[in-house]
Length: 565
Image (cartoon, rainbow, N blue to C red):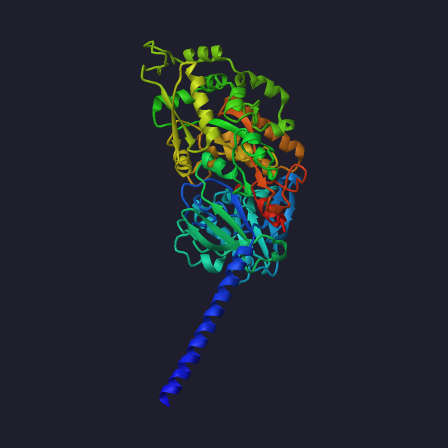
């Protein structure tokens, strides 16, 4: 009797187990199918030396999909649409009549990715962090903002230290983080934020390894109906060779890197492989005005030396070989982009154009007048003291256009007797060496904005020569008049006044030949139409198409994309 009962129970239990296994198997199959059905956009916004779980939006070491995709800005100013404000976390802003204050109205009913409400407290707290920890103020907010106050649950008021008609453009660049999370962080400067909480469309880091990471949908995104892609995939790319080999196989959907002979090495492989190359800002040669060796520092301080270097450069040859024809030679000795030619004084342009023109004989003559002569007949010039004159030229490892440009520059400067030793460093180390002043010569590009102001400000404002700022002003040239003009530009109210300031800045920087502008490159943008539609391009120029971290419009772009059926 008991045996029969036991057999019956056992038989029933086995049936339950089998049913359970079938159910689990079905659930696993559904999950696998859901995973397989998700749309995943593969993006390459930057090269990194290693993948780390760092999504601190204030950190220079954060992963390149942190801004915009995890931390949505207050406003995106659309540079291709005459700076039209595309309202995001904010719905509007109002400057005070005296330009000494600005009020932002915030969007209501927005949640963080953990379900908590977004309010004015989060905005006030984020600016408080930048004021308390200057290392977090990567956009120079503190030079303008005196205080930040909450005016109701959805209004924030900024009291400014000085009048500024353009302050909104800077304020919206500071990331907004959740107060309820970050107020518990003991050290926001070193905090990695491995499990981020954000307001952007892609906040969930589902997997992360040495090979890359998967960043998926924010379950509480306020504009979820406008988001048609489920996840972003960022594969680790360390250099141009790796990038070119993989993009040619169709691995990437949205990228922005240099491809030599782009028609042959990319576009010819598939009708879906597209690109657009809008004009960009210049690549320039930097002199370190606080170089460690005093005699080299003294040489760099001579404007005739900087002009001699500039006249030793064959700019078109750099473009033909290093950039594969993608660019135009720099004409402005200030380095201002040619796209802002209407801002330049034609007289100043012509006055300094000879120093931007290849003239090796005049370069040799100027070097000799500075006491830089070949005293031992070995083919290389020595310092006035007789010591060896050897300059290092620093570039980021894996940036093939920069590396080739450096190689060509070394050969060109050899023709006038200057010995150059090339040094490559991983990008993070490259940036650290620039910001720490641990170099003699280096190559860099510059960000561009809606007017020439962003270039002059980021490149020559001595305020930005502290280690926590980006690399662009790390030549350490200082000029009080330049700083004063840069401070005035946002405060003036008429276009004529702004034009006059830019022309004066252009005159000063060109007259001093602070850097040696080489060529105006292009903005690199590649996209694959095989899996997605809605791409911005020359026929659909809705906004800047770049995937680069310093392009806020990439948020607009990702929301415009649709998977193909």
